Length: 58
Ligand SMILES: [Zn+2]
Image (cartoon, rainbow, N blue to C red; front, top):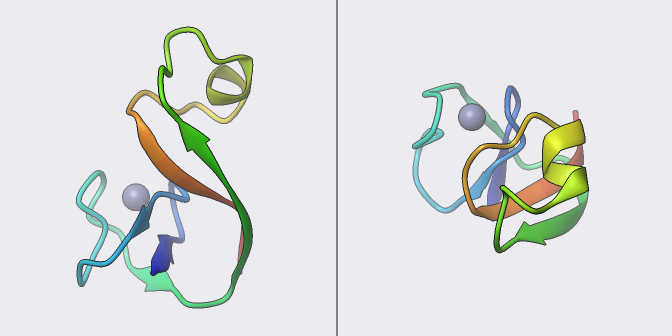
């Protein structure tokens, strides 16, 4: 899986399905957002979709 350099979404597609940005293989750690509307972390990271997100992307 690769992480979006812009919004940190993890995906197996060629580019980010959320924002269309390019992806990086160089990422560390991830969190799973099941319900972004109730997640404080999601709010902090400006996440407005459910899914897997990398914590750090280079
Ligand atoms: Zn993205």
